Image 1 (spheres, rainbow over the protein chains, first blue to last red):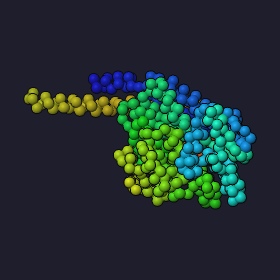
Image 2: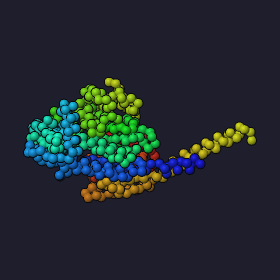
Image 3: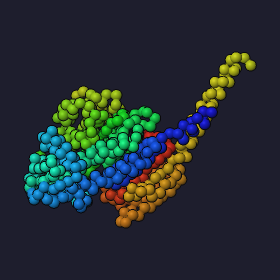
Length: 335
Length: 122
C-alpha cells in the first residue's frame, strides 16, 4: 500500500528538464520543473545565445564589437537590451565611484587573464591601458539607443554584468511559461533560485571554498526566489614567479584588486540579478569594510565576505539562511 | 491472542512496511544513477554509474578521458590548459558535475544519492 502510493507520487511529480551549454564565455545550465519545463528551458537557451551574440566582445558583429570598433569615431545604434545593460553598468560605475567600470576592457585584454597569453604586463603598458579607462567617456543617446566611446582606443567589456541581465530575462521566460520551480546557473558564479524546490522546500546552494578544489564548499545558503552571485580570486587566474594574479582588476591601480578578500557573495531576494552581478564585483574590489557599508545601505541585499585567514563576514540579513559547513571557517555576523 | 499481542503485531507490521518502503525506495533510486557526458551542449553518452568504464572523447583538437569506477566518475585526463576538470576529482552524487570549459565537456551525475546541496556557486 505504502509502496504503491510512493510510486504513484513519483509518476505524478513534476517533469524535470535540464540543459547545459557553453555560452557567454562560460558554462550555463538551466533546470526547470513542470509541464512546460522543456519549452521554458529551450527558450532560455535561445535567449542566452541571443544575448551572447549582442554582448560578447569576441563575436564579430556583436553590439559591443561595433561600439568598440567605432570608438572615437561615431555613435552606434544598438539593441535596446544592450543599451539597458550599458546604462545599468554606468549607474553602478557612479555608485561605486568608478571601481566598477566597463571601459576596463583595454586593461583586461592587456593582462589576458583566462586566456593562454596571460602575463604580467610592464608598468608602462599598464599606465598606457589605464588612460583609456573612464566610464564618463561612454556617451549615451537615450532617444535612439545609440552609444559612443568618446576616444579612440577605448573599449567596453560587459562580462561583469551581462550574465546578471541574462538571469533576469530567464526569470521572465519561466514566468511566461508558468514554471514554478527552476534553477538557473550562469557560469557557476551566478545562481538564480526561481521559486522553491518542487517539494516546496528551500534550495540549498553551496558556496565555493576559496582555498579548495572546484566543487568543494565551505557554507550553504538556503532560500527560494533568491539570487546568489559570487566573485572570487580563484575563478580565473594565472601564477607567475609564485604570485597569483586573478581576473578582478582594480581600474585605479591597473592590477588585480587586493582588498583583503578572497571571495564575496551577494545574496538577495529583492534586487535584480543584473544589480547583484555588478555588486559582487564592487564588493570584492571594495573589501570587507567599505563593501559591507555599501551592501547594508541597500535594503534586501546581503553579502558574505571571506578573508585569507578563513574569516567569514556576513550581513545581518543572512541569519538563519547561512550555515558554515567547514569548521576551518569562522563566522562573524553583524560586524 | 491478548490485546497486547495484537498491538505488538500491528506495530511490527507497520515497522516492517515502513522499512520495506525505505529499502525499496533507495534501491529504486540507486539503479537510476547515471553519468551524462555532454559535448558542446549536446548529450554525447549516458552510462550507468555502477559499471566501470573509461570513455575517450575526441572533439577536434580536444581530448578528454572520463573514467567511471566503483560507483564514482572523474575526468582522468584532458588536454586543456587549466586542468580544472581533472582537479575536480571524483564525483558520485546527483547534481555534482565536472566541467571542462576549454574543451566544452560536461560530466554530470543524474538520479541516485542526493547531495547536501542543489548547486554550488563558484
